Length: 376
Ligand SMILES: NC(=O)C1=CN([C@@H]2O[C@H](COP(=O)(O)OP(=O)(O)OC[C@H]3O[C@@H](n4cnc5c(N)ncnc54)[C@H](OP(=O)(O)O)[C@@H]3O)[C@@H](O)[C@H]2O)C=CC1
Ligand SMILES: Nc1nc(=O)c2c([nH]1)NC[C@@H]1CN(c3ccc(C(=O)N[C@@H](CCC(=O)O)C(=O)O)cc3)C=[N+]21
Image 1: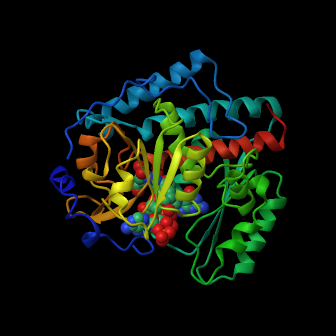
Image 2: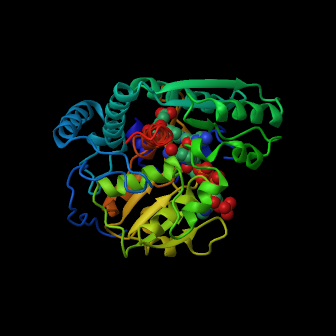
Image 3: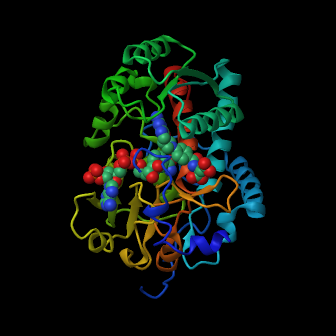
């Protein structure tokens, strides 16, 4: 049974990882009272330099109750709600955000005739990348974003990719450009990401966007989707950040590093744990907020967690599971079974950060179209 496998964090860790990716106890406390007992739609996407305008309250509430009703019937995250930690339901919040984005797109289209456009460039034929791209396309269609897709062969040249980026940079119907990562080994990521116009860099991976994120008093055009989604979950669940200790595990350009910068911008005191860190467990145990973005299944055990801490688990790790229809299932970087007994709040995998990444991509694409067309 899946749940009995789920409870064994030590055995389902690295030894049974599938090669889908590149490489790859304290007493249970109660979460401190939060100002927002349920995901709240009362505040804008604060991590964004130009926040997504909120819907009128009545429409927001209607969207929220529809999403809650849909989620409560079938969502596995909801079924796990009897664990002591509060479940941070990324699937539910992502649905709310997609609804908000959809309403805004309809308003923009009616007023200006413009619909936002997102171009996705996929190089090669990795199954996981193809799935992500397909899911992004579906999500775009559902909210009214026009999607453009280019598929290039694994052995194409860097020049070929850059040429396609240049075409989309010039195309006025395209407001966002995303180059699916990872790229084939023979390509230089930096050259390719540098070619995306920063005004259309909805992934937020251009060095100028990251640089602006790192600097005091500057704002990037776009905040990278996954870290932005993590912050949005903390905000919408009323997790206090200012003055708190945060630990980010992982320092990649696309997740760990920008997540640490965003937490620091929100006035947390931030430490970064990476593969060379000594005593990661001891450092992590000091954190009120943990963002884990490592790519090692179940690395963070219950003993790493300060009672009551809020945990955002970014990791998406396939582990062998013959009982699942796909032959594998996804687990996070945090041992959910153990962590949910110690933490105050935690995101599940799946159903946590993953859906938020896609929702933030849609939100960034809308934001871009609004900025380019000066639509408020
Ligand atoms: N939910 C979502 O939407 C997304 C999920 N992901 C998932 O998040 C995870 C991380 O992705 P990404 O940032 O791209 O991964 P990378 O492989 O680029 O980075 C991993 C980071 O983790 C660090 N690390 C590796 N092993 C350890 C260890 N044992 N202890 C401490 N730190 C360690 C590395 O340290 P060092 O720098 O020293 O090498 C590196 O900084 C993956 O599971 C990925 O699938 C990624 C993007 C989006
Ligand atoms: N240019 C670029 N931008 C990215 O944002 C980017 C990328 N490249 N390369 C790969 C990573 C990974 N990533 C995910 C997005 C959604 C889920 C997601 O929706 N996951 C579901 C599970 C999906 C399933 O069941 O397979 C969940 O966690 O609930 C996961 C991972 C974006 N990435």
